[in-house]
Image 1 (cartoon, protein in one colour):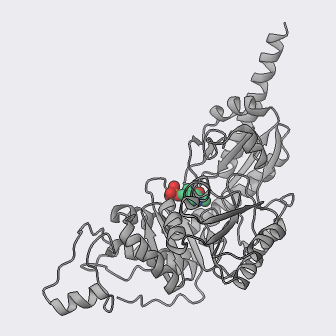
Image 2 (cartoon, helix red, strand yellow; image 1 turned 90 degrees about the vertical axis):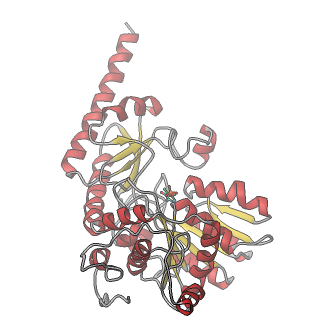
Image 3 (tube, rainbow, N blue to C red; image 1 turned 45 degrees about the horizontal axis):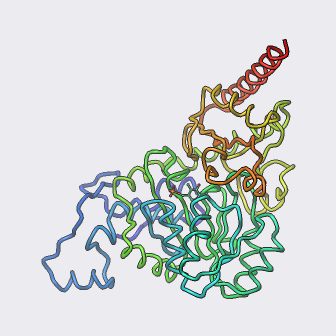
Length: 410
Ligand SMILES: *Cc1c(COP(=O)(O)O)cnc(C)c1O
């Protein structure tokens, strides 16, 4: 069934609630059903044939499409303002599927050094095996990225803001450079979400999400989504239906449910993260704070231009090196110490033991990741409670280290 609602002029938070909801409501249910059926039966063989060919809407087999999953794809498609969307078992399946579907031996891809750890592995470990050339540029040096694009490439792959130092990449400027070469621009919009940033409006061709993070928002389901023009999405979908990295309908339902509160969550997380970033910037135990909403951020101007909010993730380094991190993090009451982000609960961790654990200290420093860096994904707790929690942990850790030093010098 076509969505009968008119979303023109509606805000993202409203689209997150109503987008895609009109299809597949059974028995007057107001909520989307979880359809577990792997196969869909047809007694009319002509109808079956038409659905199989794609000339008629419907479902054949669960690896290809599923009604519950289709509602999720439609909702995110509406949120991103895209023509088409398709989904994947995880964010990494979406990213690797997109790259493998679009690239062939002899092609060249231009990207940045600060992509998500798994994406970086695809660039450095897997694509080269298929004779695909990869140029990874300094994330903050837009002129260098433009120069690499100008050498010719099939795909330009961007991510903004980045993990873990929240660098910002100019989507509009680099999309322009890419399109001069006829390249396809892919943007990982996981950190920003469709509440804060619309890469397609800025010139990108495809937007990819780890739905595991902010879209689902509850850290209880893995998923990935790709949005963009009909033809490109169909090309990637074709790879996925054969490759088989299909999103499970149960996970799709959990993400759909999480999406209903996307607008509320992101508004709260934007506000909290900015206040916390400002608080940390003025704290005596903190060395540096990385957040696109701060005036001190290298590309704050670009962030202001291309983002409506600065997102729920920030990072900061401590004055006392990794020893300070070791003492501070376990003192937090309101944070999971885990390798995740984008959840309703605050999640904190050092990139040294989470996202960038496979790198050496030298490699991390070369990437501009201080050894005492903490990534802090702000949940939806009251901002004052999070600030008090951070302050207590910072003061407590500083006191403990001071006490130990004086004990050692006795
Ligand atoms: C987590 C994450 C991914 C990978 O998503 P999974 O669902 O864990 O496979 C990709 N990009 C970014 C920015 C992420 O944070």
